[in-house]
Amino acid sequence: MAHIGATCRSFFTPSVITMMRVRDPERTNDLFVDKRRDRPVAETLAEYERWSRVMGVAARVPLDWTRLPMAELGWFRGGVMIGGAMTCDQHTHLRHGIAPALGRPAPGTDANRMAVVLEWMMAVLRNQSRSARPEWFDRPVTVELEGPGGGIWSVGPGGVVRTGPSDKPAATITGRAVDFPEWATHRADWRRRDLRISGDADYATRFLDFVRVV
Image (cartoon, rainbow, N blue to C red; front, side, top):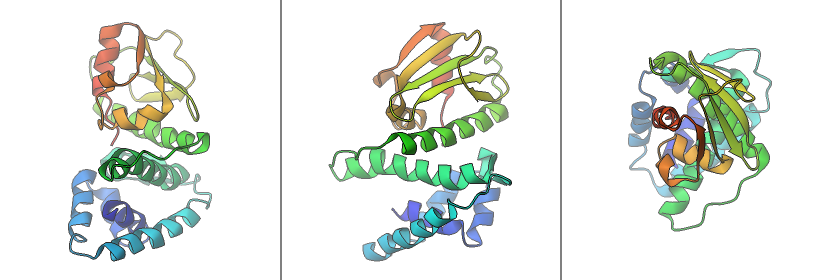
């Protein structure tokens, strides 16, 4: 909760400069949380409640005319970064971190929320693939995510990620949209989730091991 609250607040304070320029966003998140470890729980929750509301208002402002950087994750359309990054962050932490820690079932989701989460994650995957450019990745794969908010994406060499299937994919990977945030962030091993692979299984396995959206 301290991490999510700090992230929401940082967009409206000088801390946003740090978030845009750092090379290790995970370490920066740790530093933000370290500053809040001794705070009372009520103060931590109040910070999240206050600044997440502000973030909700900001997300309604049309910002797609501008592009903004986010640490080593690359550049994004403003609307995608503000609305997408925070929706994905809260969605993922709540369902795959906070609820399990409290021994409670993960809350449900809906098509609109999942669509926003997946849009952000595919944008991050695009930038990460473009930056890494693994030599072995020389053929596209099709990723089909089923259920509310799902869709079909073609992921190709050079950081090409677009909606729709690949023309001649080396492999097609099919799974549930609701599971993607968990295994694509390495909170769970994709091998333990219900994924179906057709085509070149070895190539698909290498791709799935490569995917790590942070």
